[in-house]
Amino acid sequence: ATSLMAGKKGLIMGVANDKSIAWAIAKAAREAGAELAFTYQGDALLKRVKPLAESVGSDFVVPCDVTDEASMDAVFAEVEKRWGKLDFVLHGIAWADKDQLKGRYVDTTLDNFSRSLQISCFSFTDVCRRAAPLMTDGGSLLTLTYYGAERVMPHYNVMGVAKAALEASVRYLATDLGEDNIRVNSLSAGPIKTLAASGIGDFRQILRWNELNAPLRRNVSLDDVGKSGMYLLSDLSSGVTGENHHVDCGYHTVGMLEPDSAPQ
Ligand code: NAD
Image (tube, rainbow, N blue to C red; front, side, top):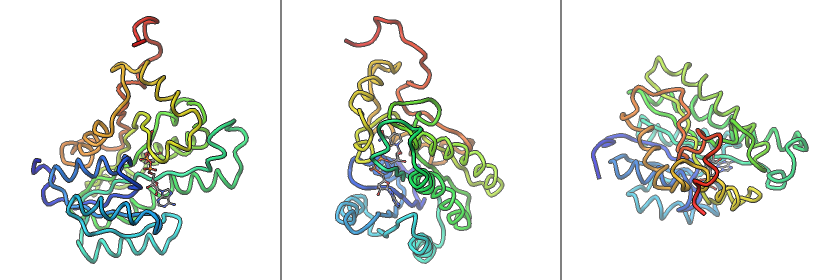
């Protein structure tokens, strides 16, 4: 444990269970001394999120569906009431219709496109707008993205388009909020077996491909992403904003490895 984030108060959005990337980053922030609040989506997840929150010394757990304005209003009203300020927010929320995370992107329906972009991209902009007035000492806003925004990955489809929009929005948000010393970044994680990932077709093969082709010759762990997320939420990254930080064992840098250099 360190005191790097002692006295910092942060909102963690997107924990579904102990495999969630948001949880890994929350744990790392807590180990650095931060005080945490958690949102959960729907009653079914409360029984998972509440004990996790308790395990990091937090009884601040509030429901939030990002498509429900009243619940978003309530979250930020509660933060203002309990804390009066906010130092960081982690947004680890995305959604697309499972049936369209296989097959072809060209077949995406308008309904799925709109809802995917709303939940996976607009919700971060909405969170930033609501959080900024509470960040009276400056702050850090972080969202999670994936390489499927930059290059085509199998079955990622509309999520790739939503993540591209999310990454572009990070640059605009960083520019809008920079004069208030509020930083906005994204962390592009390599593939990790989470609840959300289980909806993506052929995910096991994607994991194997990354393991064989990443410079570090392995997949990222939750711990890798947790530590880098903590860096972006903390003052360690005080000069970093508008950035998309890859935590993917270097996969995004490679065109092609030496044909026989990969592990067999
Ligand atoms: P996860 O299933 O643990 O987390 C997804 C979260 O989104 C859940 O907590 C869910 O409740 C929440 N969510 C979905 N719709 C919501 C809504 N309408 N309102 C509020 N919350 C809602 O999976 P994860 O893999 O940890 O996903 C977290 C983020 O990381 C996502 O943005 C995902 O795209 C991104 N990501 C995941 C991977 C991966 O391989 N797992 C890689 C890169 C980026």
